Image (cartoon, rainbow, N blue to C red; front, side, top):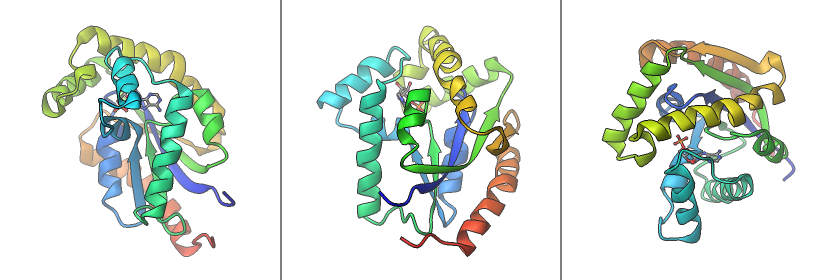
Length: 206
Ligand code: AMP
């Protein structure tokens, strides 16, 4: 691929609100939101990859890097081929990937990360409450079990947090994420609106 997708990463612990903010941004023309967990959940759970996903996610573990990156690449290709994601005009908003340094390295050839929005919620109890609400609403096994939830936080600290040091400090923005979705959205928009405006005025020539 000659051009890397211009991209904004939504980063944060489970329950920090990446999905909520990503879904809202995805409604704004010029943003294309892709949540890695949603792509996994859309798989046929009887397929070999679907089964692998269930095995790992039900324990609060990450799906192995190679499978994840391969699935992400296939999905992105399909979104571009179907013109759902238009890389010349749209900013890609990635949520839940990369989740390991090895994934960040593998994605480096495909994405040009303009900003990393690090959603910070220092209150772990609040994040757990959000995950439990989501478990009920979306029937998510991985967010229903207390032990699995706590393991997800350990995995986040050990495997995902180090991804932050992979990117230059000047593109990482801390977003307080304890407030209501609309307050968080204001902070998110403050950061992404100028980036979108620049991309809008300087579209890629593919
Ligand atoms: P999420 O919806 O982002 O909370 O993801 C749900 C589950 O999907 C995670 O606990 C992992 O098992 C799997 N998953 C999602 N994204 C990734 C990723 N980038 N790498 C590995 N596993 C992932």
